[in-house]
Image (cartoon, rainbow, N blue to C red; front, side):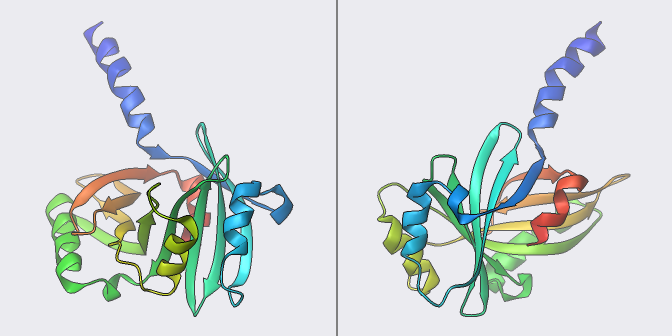
Length: 190
């Protein structure tokens, strides 16, 4: 009986740590109007605009992926079209050495082996900021905001091998992780 009670307490926590994201390509007309207003303010030389609807359990959001000055970006919006964050695909080796060392130290002290699959700089929007200025400052690399980092890595612990999405704050300190569901993994690579 004790085992059942313990499992009932643990299971919701474990499931909340899994990323079951499903991404579906949609047309611009299916995007929330508030998000379209932000998208209209993007520089004219943004290329390959692709619109997506994402579901992750109960959460629904919208994402615009595009290229600008040879970099890949994604803008994420809430279900009602409010901006949540902007992410920039980056190479792990280009992250500031001090931050990269902290991230590497976390991985080497926590896992038997690890391999970084994908790295992104993440700028989370704060409501006191002007949305258009926030986005354009990041695109023009003039933002005073320090990015957090999302790292997708294949990790090996004692017996398990998993793919997880790790979040690190702007100082390179570990914040949290989510295990990626293999069926939702492919689109994550961009």
